[in-house]
Amino acid sequence: MKRSSFVSLGLAVAGAAALAVAVTAPASAATPSAATPDTSGVYSVHPIVEKAGFSTSAVTPSLTPAQCLAQTAGRVACQTPDSIRAAYDIPATINGVPAGTGQTVVIVDAFGSPTVQSDLATFSGAFGLPTPNLTVYYPGGKPTWTGKKTQLGWAEETSLDVQWAHAVAPGANIALVVAANDRGATIDNAIKYAVDNKLGNVLSMSFGEADNLISSPNANNGQTSQGEKSFVKGAAQGMSLFASSGDEGSDNGAGFANYAFPASDPNVTSVGGTNLWAGSGLNQPRETVWGDYANCPLTCAFGVVGETGGAPSLFTAKGGSDVAYNASVYTGVLTYLGFLGGDNNGLYFFGGTSAGSPQWAALTADTIQAVGHTVGNVGQQAQSWASKGLLYDVTVGSNTTPTFSGGYSATAGWDRPTGWGTPDVNGIIAALK
Image (cartoon, rainbow, N blue to C red; front, side, top):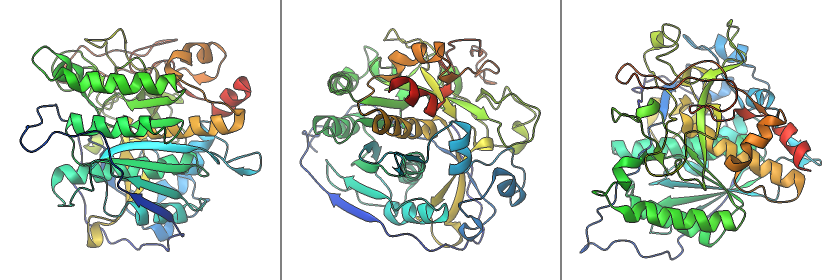
């Protein structure tokens, strides 16, 4: 997974809408004590980030992709909440109220962000969204912010997750469950807390680790065992669980085909990645597999590259992604970061399959509101949805990388990089009513 360096540009911060926030620190399942070293694997996040060349004051609710591109240099496409809703047929309102009303989107991250509330408010105000309602939970205690590289990566991820869950389900509550660190056991406890207390009907996890590293005989099997217990319980409760498939192709940077956990778990819907070319003006299909290397020189020319995960799991029966969503930073979404300091604060373009997981959770919350019942495991229903034309089939592209030739190509129907395709949300709602 890759991440670009920050470019210092002066950005003006627009006025933020009011934000209702409740921060709680409930008790949780036991975490490893100082006397018992935590040997579980580390979950990682690597959102792909590039600075936008304009301020939040230049953003309005009616900002079109073309207008966005006109204010930036070297972009392929520029997606806003409005353009994403149009691309995936996501309703802004349902029964006269903002989409997602009455639902809660649960997001699990580590470390969190020191400015998550104010950044969400700035993002919401800039794009004319309803006032967000965010509750932050710290099951293992609130982590101390140091601003080190690992925490910065998780803060970026946290910002992306909450802002784009709000963009897609603007009426929903957001429950952010923050693990005290990025160790597997600690994050598993955060997941357990969210499931045990059923904080919402949908849950997103935009992190992962190659499943061979945390499930092999030489690894801590308790990490996958605890996660599996929570996922089984969540599925039994009717929860829809989502996880990103990864950003380093079919080998997850390991040099051989493998899949990322928790996306590889059969109770979790794995979200692969696409390039959403809508609004780019380029002679391209609607969507292709997110594989920047495979799209060279079109995307390699911009410097930062990545590609969706999607390969057979080594330890479960899962064969790859279940569904997909826009993921390339070159067709990426705008997110506001306010924790970097000075001129580094501002709007950034984000890419990665970690952008798709919270949006799939949010659009499922919209669906639940509209149909009046839970949806359950989306991955297990995706084939049926695809057969009814409720998912856009991605048939072009691959997730091969320069360092690993064993990637997989898109094809008609299901494929490893993009699963059964990307959503037509209004179509899904109509079919499930």
